[in-house]
Image (cartoon, rainbow, N blue to C red; front, side, top):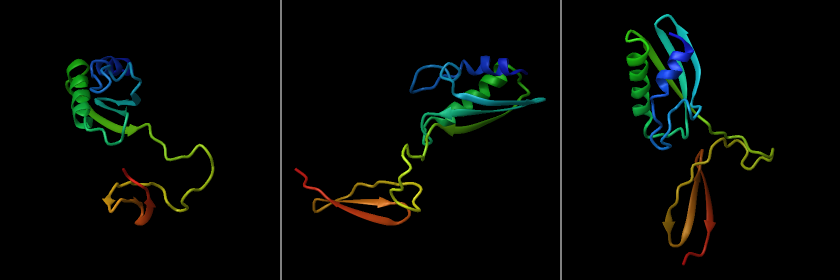
Amino acid sequence: MTNEAILAALSNVQEPDLGKDLVTLNMVKDILIEGNKVSFTVVLTTPACPMKDMIMSACVNAVKLLVNKEAEVTVNFTSNTTTNRLDAKTVLGGVKNIIVEKVALEKVRYLQIWPWHWLKAEQKWD
């Protein structure tokens, strides 16, 4: 097994939303081969990709069918997201992620901010 053989096999795996293969989209990283064991990382477009299981199965099948039927394939996932701001300003000190939940109650918006902080933003709705 070689990196080139793994990439050639994975070039047959299509990213369902984008309609191109994983290799063309540069979504395969960190290929590691040790005997019959191969691992690599697929970079998803979103961490909550609903097609993750399908992509994993397609990757495993491609390597086993086209490279080595005895291969032990490990597919890792990551995504190209960042929590870093472009500017260094602190918006909410101590808060790493914000989860926004929209609730309509008497024309008032409530935003839930992780961890367990609530902001209330009044807005006139039509």
